[in-house]
Image (cartoon, rainbow, N blue to C red; front, side, top):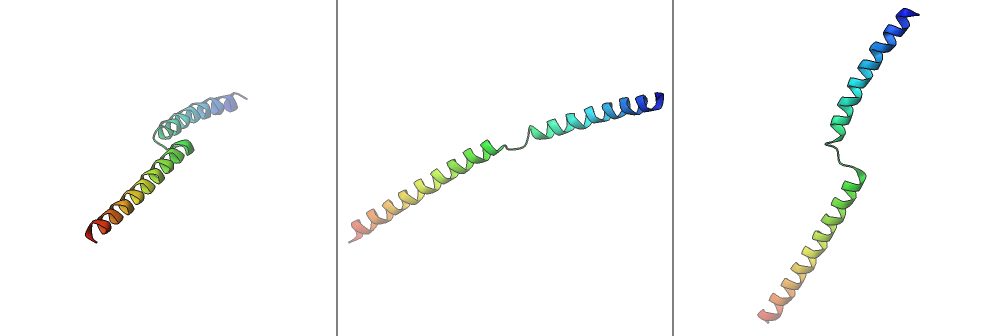
Amino acid sequence: METRVIKLEEFAGEARDRLTRIETRLDHMATKEDMSKLEATLLRWFIGTAVSLTALVFAAAKLIH
């Protein structure tokens, strides 16, 4: 019984250390919400750039002719 308790206490210490390392890594990981916000921002920029370039091309074509 004594050896079981000692092994469990050792495991608890190791588990605590492993959990700390995992939590430290998670601080640097992107969440689903972060990825969703990034996707929305990139999509907005892409559409805005496409519309602007299209307007620029039509304006240039109109001025040339």
